[in-house]
Image (cartoon, rainbow, N blue to C red; front, side, top):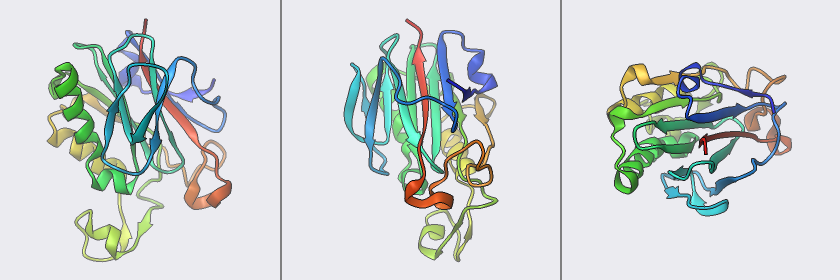
Length: 205
């Protein structure tokens, strides 16, 4: 399976991960996922399969992958090597406005005792600020008074830092799904015929 990887997460040898591309495979084996609803809801995965409705999933079970599907929204992968926790979040504009990454970190702390200072976070490919023009209603949720372009990767990076993740432990992969039709699916570019990329993370068994 051909995936992009975070150079930072690769240094955490107890984890494996990948950000999906057009060339990647389908649903992961030994993995859990959510029915994505563009929310700020994070669930806990204890076993393989569908965990419920939400937009982020965390697990402390070695060998169990968690994944999200995207096609312009941002996949955010989180790793806590101290507590052995893996998380995947789906951050489109609605999820970002709802604070999905902050909700994920809070759930990691509540359930597994994770400290945000121990977390490493990688923000994968998504629609870049170069291409993401939004109307007034959406723009206002991100501090703009009028329609214009917004940077969802930067917004999620800021939310991670506000939640306590050190800046040096956050990597933005920086690929735009809308610009690069060869490597990525894009709902905004291709509409209903767009496929989905799968991004995953797991603690090695």
